Length: 224
Image (tube, rainbow, N blue to C red; front, side):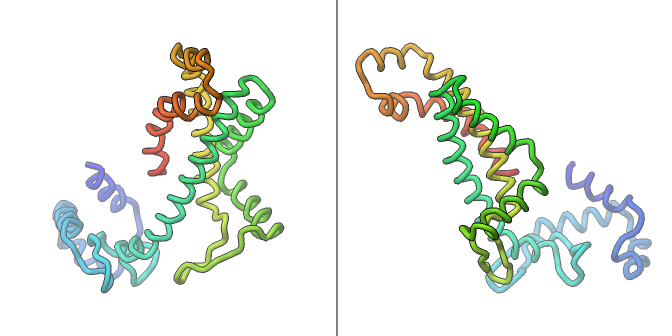
């Protein structure tokens, strides 16, 4: 249904890059027939490069001479690396910050972590990303520019900045709330009464149940 709706919405809008070249063929074919042909091409494999195979999603409306499959095949490895690195860093930093905030509930660390988390969630990427690139990559020189294939990247990158800040903020909030709830359980008080050290209680008994809401959030976070 989503494919069908998108197909007809794209063709209901006036104008297009291929109107003049394909006006006769479009008049000779109904939209329903074009949808069937396009769907069948999407479901059949076509060779994009000598080493990659992808679905035939048709020509690109923005880049003349390229197909949608070619653009996806060339950009997906870069997006995958940046996305996975962003999520890994967000999980590590956000999780650690959430644990620290829960252990210092209503304290200075708690307020500081939650302030940074809400800032990362609220500030848009077109504001946050240039500031981080200017600070870390240009002014401090900590993260230099690097080349990946034909693409020139600057770390931190705009998409990664937004992913790390937003996902890290959500993870910190989820981890804080879950850790506070877990630390109030009876088995945690029993572990403390037995004389276990604080780090043993956190990593051996409290961390696993506190990670449940974080892991539930990782699905839509990775997709975003």
